[in-house]
Length: 154
Image (cartoon, rainbow, N blue to C red):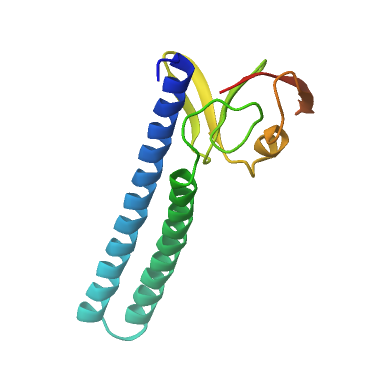
């Protein structure tokens, strides 16, 4: 793999993977802390204060579980992405250069910078991602009142 653009694509994939692993770890830690808090409430409290503390801990556990579930779904998307090959149309895993911004169709990991160039890791379900999917170089469309032209797809 000598193509520098494919190497950038691999770096973006690695950054997305790190991003999602961090989200998974954060969600697991939040669940564990909430569970420990609930267990402490059991040991030290009685009455209404106990019930309120347990309910709040349970809400935190549920919130963490939802976040973990979402992060695991996004990890699954990354794990199923095609290898770093050039394509003629935008699909999951494509690196898309436009006249406005550069997009990496993967997971919604946001702004990333490689070699002083900004890329946006976005989901194919995002508004701009949905407009890019299936399009080829030279295709143009309007997004947020701006004319966007696909210049290159890697």
